[in-house]
Length: 401
Image (cartoon, rainbow, N blue to C red):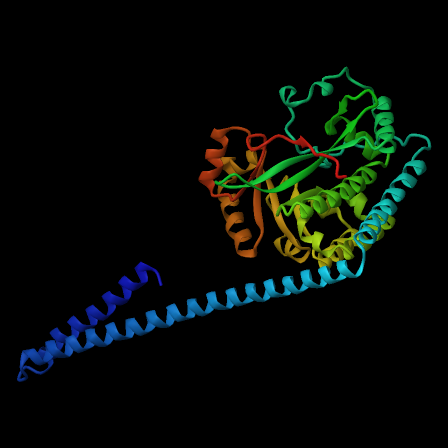
């Protein structure tokens, strides 16, 4: 119980005792006045005793809740230990080389499906589509000239050159993977990394996402890039497992990727046989893709959710969420732009969202935090996770060997 509750209880039985002590002599004038005050004192003592009993029962209830939570955690740890023991026994039953060979072959099958899609796309260019605001791998970055490597400062390329650079980079495996930290606040401890992609042209310069995403989507190559990104994510997670690093990865997944039945079949098969990697990978889907997603998209999300995957929503343009839908499809993270969070007109709505999401187990991440002053404003609003250049710019990931 809160301090205010205790005060209310105490005032109640004190007032009752004084009332009895003052009223009883008036009702029976012939009686000794001390009898009334003794009766009032008994009422106060009885109230204090009842207060103590209620307080003790409340403490025992909370202690029981803590015990049950600890018991559930202990049971979960025991199950995890049994899973690890089973995995160790399986590793002993098979040679390390065989296990490594199986993992590599699964990834090779995925890459083969990507290569086949490249040959399918070599027809005539598609008619121009409306500009998309899809947040692809890396498109969420706030990129400035000072933040770019020298190879990125390159003369502008026309659309045909960009398309050829993307196709060539996919065939030659020159899609570079960059990682940007997502930190807990206020500690700034790295909790996750978001995975971005950048295209490296044959001459070594980088083609940034804001230049190639729309063209790649128009030409039907976005799913291929996303798919390659997922394969690299699995390799990164396996590498962190070997190094015993406890960190997760956020990776963009588009509606086009979810609708790629051949790739998703291979990917689900690979992850089913690598169940320990599943909790380390969070799929990121834009608000627009989720809202526009048909039965196929939602069905794949449900299938991934049953396998143990969790999801994050990004590129939020409106604070009108269908929270039940988010929970139903295992969305456990929502990213909000710093400007949206700090917009005075949205303050009440953002506060209500924080309360509702906290009750439902959904974490809010504020992105594009670039200065200490911006961070101070964010901390004043009470958010628990942040992302942006203040905590670290995207850095090239070493290719797993």
